[in-house]
Length: 112
Length: 117
Image 1 (tube, chains in turn orange, yellow):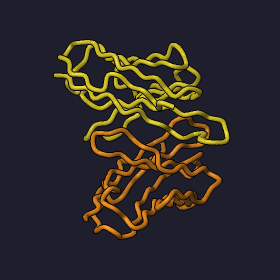
Image 2: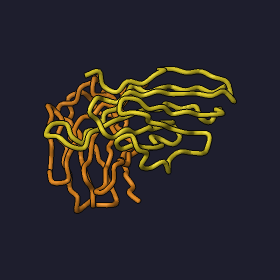
Image 3: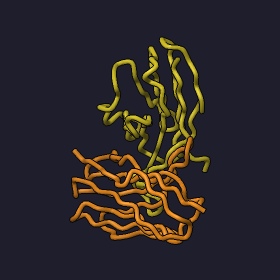
Image 4: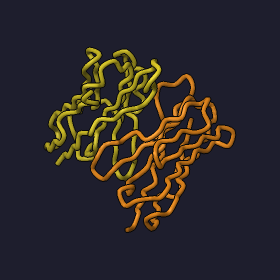
């Protein structure tokens, strides 16, 4: 059974700092990995999806990397802003599976 | 594209009542997922469909929960009878398996917040 872990559960940084969020998974036979953002009381917004054959994906100030052999993905946020404050979740989908397993998320607070 | 549409956005009901949550997936998407989110348990997959067929309902907590997808553009999640512990936010999500752009991206609706008194 795939287990997905996100550590730390919460992170607070000053505005402008570069930061890394972590996602670990136990089964490396993945199909893809997706990073989401969730604002309080809202739904999940997709940020980046990395296919199994890819090593990283970039969108604006966000960069997600994937290392299947070590069972890790990181989400790098450059020059953080207060508007980046949210909970970030990763979801891992295994090969031959239609569903994804979610981590519990990291709640990020960027202080002005 | 209007995205994944869920209704109602908020539902307050009394214990024992039937609750029906509705979802319209993105047109052309062949996978539909129902999730439940609580502070205690996080995001849990309840059931998912592929081409309107239920594939995995192992996350459905008990027989009080049922889900249907009568066609490609509509799904329901029903709780009967409802209990206070069913209070949560229920999300519907959809994705498509093929295509050059956007394939496999899981897109969520805004959720239905259920409160059972």
